[in-house]
Length: 248
Image (cartoon, rainbow, N blue to C red):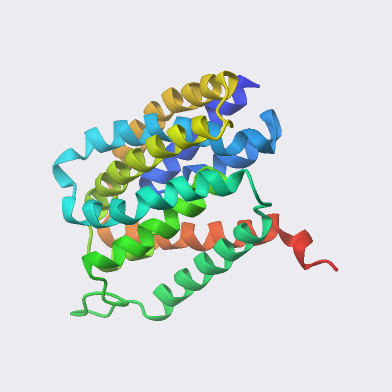
């Protein structure tokens, strides 16, 4: 069982490096299969602290602190509220909404694909990350770690590939640490989950390393295409996983 968790973590963090995030898309179903659905939020969160810390260190010179300040201003209360709400509701409908949002965001990006001389598909100001950070952290608190929901925002703000990865990593470490404290406070953090989380977190290191090597060979344009394609795939998979909600 631990072998499959470690393998999934290596693959997930490799893919997330070259696609701008989304390691949880690969990890969540494997964790659910090995440990049960209840383990997904805590295990992915603990693992993400390790993986994102290593990534933040690797891209420390490319971090945009203005984005982080705005994002964390909304993310801190969002993470606490999401962790609390986890103990109160069924998250199936939330996953469905996230899936639709990701799909629409990706389609919008491709339909309004940048022409030469244009800045982005839509203009993004730094303060946009305050409400976006709250929404991301709230949903992340509910399901452990969301798919790359803020990637379109980062790209349209103008972050390049290393800037996106470094900035995103710092914000994620902060959010996940808050969530871990909240999970402990609300009684859903257990030692077995922590141990499994640490295992997949350590396994993230070789995944990040391999991804960093490949990232250096990818152009900015290709990185953006990969990132948005992964956002679209994430949305489609989340809709498929919740397909039972469409059956009446």
